Length: 273
Image (cartoon, rainbow, N blue to C red; front, side):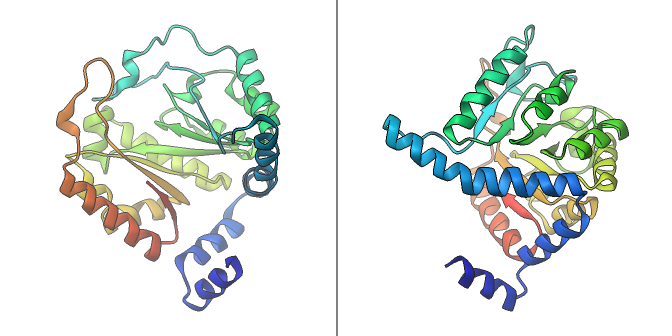
């Protein structure tokens, strides 16, 4: 079935083939090795077998990936963000994170998503990434801390894929995240592109931006910045004082679904939602 699908994609010049060519031709050696060895082989192939072995022994199937918040600290104060409701005084101890990752790998889990707070605000985070160089990390980040020096670190270790958060173009992003954030994110993307890092975008679809962030104009703009993947999340009012005013309407949710589906079949980019 996989070979048949690949054959059909090849004949139809599906954009996924262009994405694969871009990845193979543009990523740095370390980032390409990390993507293939840690994400495709360890997570996608070997990990699946280990998870099945674990299930036969323990009686339940472990998850395929892990979500963790190494810190709840953040250097921004975005409108509608629920993380401000949580305690940000103490980070999760590095020893605890190491133990969790070791146990995860024993279950066959090699893919980790970091949430926040802002992951890159933690000074020892690169030491943690390097200690677990047989895992792959998707890091949701506001992008404001990713400078040229950090991009070189990411390119060196090769097992981290930043997903930069945006709300739309400059007007929409700066309105929710603070003045100047949009330009800082574009600069961070530029640094990552130059270093051959596998990176993408993260979008929270709200009542205010659903049509814009799913438009051809916006997706094409992100492709021009060098994004290889993107994730769409619908705004969910959570926390102690949830704000329902940012929730997308049912009609906007259907529109977003159809737009993402279209983009998957027409744009050389992986999109999840």
